Length: 217
Image 1 (cartoon, helix red, strand yellow):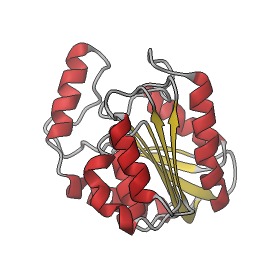
Image 2 (spheres, one colour; image 1 turned 135 degrees about the horizontal axis):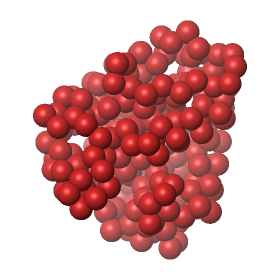
Image 3 (cartoon, one colour; image 1 turned 90 degrees about the vertical axis):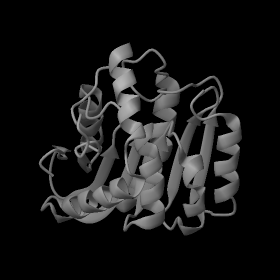
Image 4 (cartoon, helix red, strand yellow; image 1 turned 45 degrees about the vertical axis):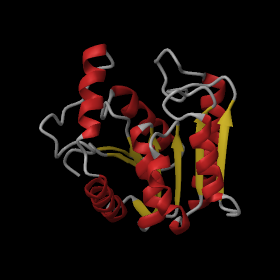
């Protein structure tokens, strides 16, 4: 976990949350979210999902940084990242502060891998905020075994309503799977400090996701 940011709860042992960042990497806002979740009573680890890339560093949210980040995202090997997530889960579970229960939460790019963790890996819950490309992984939907909470912006150009509908249909009938679409919200609604941030939707979606994670306590 040498390239992973870890935030610890105020006291005692607690469940773990693996926080999978957007395409930009472990930005200051991701560290802030990790600390926020730790304050809610979790051991939080945010890994660098791009540590294998030739450009592993955090990218800035500028036009140039966004272009580099998106190009890097196109270079990833999906199965390799899933394997890396598996290793990060094992490392998080092994921390002395962790009870062994693990939730995974992903933002944007990381959301697809939270979904795949719920389908392929040993986790106890998963959630994603404005995830992208889950529609490319729906073959894994029948294997989703952990409770999962997915949150989309109805105006998100990166995940159109047709994709949200496909995800909803793929998970339909599962009492432990929930999919929410928020009218008026767009991509990045849950990322504080960016133009699309919607505090009300961010808080509602976080509360809904943590209704799952709090069960791990």
